[in-house]
Length: 426
Length: 116
Image (tube, rainbow over all chains, first blue to last red):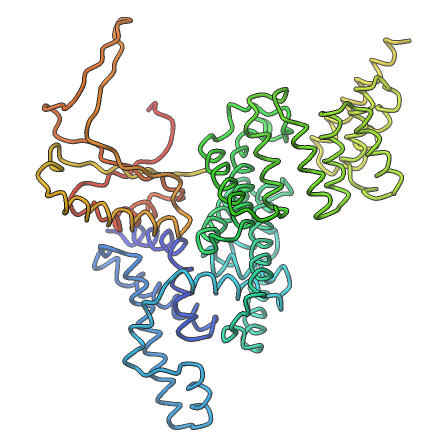
């Protein structure tokens, strides 16, 4: 084996193994920064040994065992030190209240709980959303600082600093020692889900960055979501989040045209949708709904996405059901964007006039003033009602608001088409 | 989405040589492996396959169906795992954890178009 081959293998394995290793070490050491450092040491040991000795039979287990040995050594050293310094010793006693004999045993306790705890730590409410996201990608997705920086179009030192500060905040607040009360669990889970969905959307929305980087963000988010749903199988929203991401990811190939232009849901070639991901999404949705709680925002959005996924063509979409789901979503998480989507669904189910009425209300409220989709939707509804002159004005307004050049061109074309229609009528 | 498939390639007839209890124990190990892939969010789909098979082909517009067992075949695909992982190295690393690697062969294949 060449050194290059060994490096590639180790890099690849780090991505999928590091989270479990850091999680296990965090439980032993109660120190995220130290856990990551020792896990990295195990990685360095692999880089040093594998090119000479070859890749071990079970490389993931090798990394875990090596890292745990280092952690246990570290604890023994801490304990010797603690015996010398009684004050410190007392604190350690409280943290690790068992003897050396049990250390090895404890190192093999359930990995799942460790991982969930690490997710809770990385997404702790003490941290800003940016810090949570960076820490989650670093500790749980195994990305390097450089990769995170590239995904978020932020300079690398900014991300590095964000991570260092976050770890410091966690240590100062003694977060790894925290035990959660049952009522805190829900809140912490939603914080984790929020971060995962944010990472997914960073990949999904075409705000910039290299193509493959964005796709890999979607994949990482999906993977973390699937892990979370396995760790918290009784949480309906965790399944809802997975369902939503699986179904949205199923359209990744269909939503960008050959020239890089965005293609809207109704215009997508449905043959390009990934049936396997749709199937997985529908199963996750069913699992979430079977838990019988009242549906939260992720399950509702997943149910809406599922309506589209089930329809073989736009015409076969169950818009009445989608409207009902948007009603429920709007009651739960009222927002102008949800309201706008509801207006579109209403127009498809009950005609453009009914939809237009809802967008009139939004326009009158003065919300979404700089959001190009409001005039774009209104333009579409007005054109469907044959009110071409007003429609043209809305499309022009939308074109002026969008920052995406391709979308801008598309909107101007629609405005021009409205002008033609109007001229024909005269 | 990048994906790899692990195909479990078994020696023809080997299943029949095993005691039922032993077969079930190996199957149990494979279920544990499946669960560990799932916990890491890496499993897209997996199934194990029964030995009985039928082969269908159409030549010059004529369809033929032949029922197994196919004594001339040395091997059979005993099951598969579809993995949502990004690189060959990851797929090989996960294949190395597969218990079946000890009694069968784990073939690692990348998902992609079927023309060369």
